[in-house]
Amino acid sequence: MGDDVIVETRHLTKEFKGFVAVSDVSLKIRRHTIHALIGPNGAGKTTCFNLITKFLAPSGGRILFNGHDITGTRPAEVARAGMVRSFQISAVFGHLTALENVRVALQRKLGTSFHFWKPVRSLARLDGQAMDLLEAVGLADARDIPAGELSYGRKRALEIATTLAVDPEMLLLDEPMAGMGGEDVERTAQLIRRVAAGRTVLMVEHNLSVVADLSDTITVLECGRVLAEGPYAAIAADPRVMEAYMGTGVAHG
Image (cartoon, rainbow, N blue to C red; front, side, top):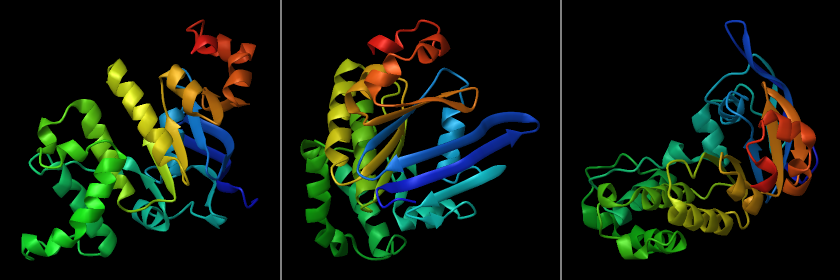
């Protein structure tokens, strides 16, 4: 595997009781890029994503991360190695403030996650780091607001902040724009662009205008197989892709 490739899948396959959801998918995700998985409903995007993040075991094929075979590795071990799916770390506790949520994630990195008997003041040393992360995702003004009171888009930003607290080398986002209105979509797109600096991002996303704007490389899946791959301009001009989307406007975002 070349030095510029952080994740590679080789002939990745997943069957569910005779149904082949992912078939012979070989990907190379380059370091420090944003790589998107797209495709029509039922294309196998989420299954492929779950295989890479180790939430599903493949029926065949291999997965490599930084040149190491992680095909049989547990999700928590993969996360500790630096490949983190946002919800693995970023469970938002609605009764805790935004600052407290990020501080919990910082505790995990220090290995003190479960030292709940310690007085709250002992965690104050993490407040500076927590505020830096809140500022990075545009939530500095929400430090003392319970997470449950934040808008949907701001909760997603908080999830990303808690994920960044463990300083992942690679960040995996499953439909980060799902359920968002236009303003939140734009804010979250800007956030992804910022946090991608110096990191690799793999995302599954249905919002094609976001994919066009953010992605360096796009892989299109259809019926569990790779249909096309490349930059957005090439993907949008590919008649096979337009046919797969049955005229839903992929070429126009």
